[in-house]
Image (cartoon, rainbow, N blue to C red; front, side, top):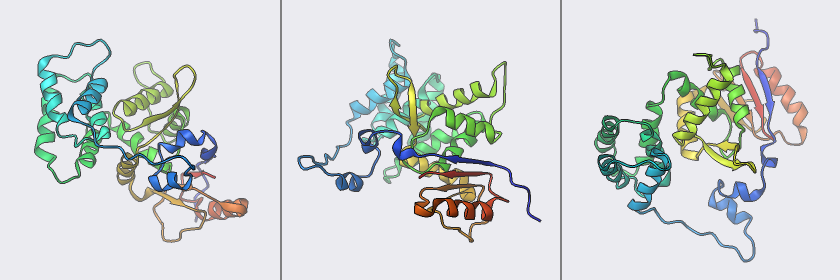
Length: 275
């Protein structure tokens, strides 16, 4: 016997949320070329210098006006040399350094030097290291849950916090309600560059965020096969899915949605349509 339906349906017309200029920085080069203007050209960015990587690490690891102790600077510059000119690597490691002691800086450095060689896979390893150091464990679950939204989708803070609450990932503690805990978790993910701000309002407050493609890949690997994406076709071979994201339902949207809900409603906890 099939279990009663329970879950949440969310519709996100995400392509209408921001102007193309805001989306352009998130899209692959091939997509930008498609929108190529007559007098425009694609500029290929070079890798950052070691000094630039250290500048990014400092900006993430210290607050404005902080005096950087020489021993911290030595560790930071040593790691900056191994960021391979990648800004995301510098941002992530800088976030890990924030509010950490000298011993913790040295521990991160030792882990970096012992595990990150010249195999060209530095960024994936540093992202995994950042994930492994997330605390408490429920924060890791919140991070993984973010991957149910497709790449390049812009999501509001409130949407994520409400999703985490609905999933039972948040617990009130020390006088803080679940929403406050969710906002704290959100800020921690931003601090670690596992989420990134895409658009702010006139007052500088964050409106929309998303995940870097490589961060999204990591979140997907953590969540596993419980989340799938489809263009509206029923996927009979998927048996363990708890989350379904439909990126396009086309002209027969209503019929397709009803068909999918009828097919999956007994096992799917969250059904999101992005169209």
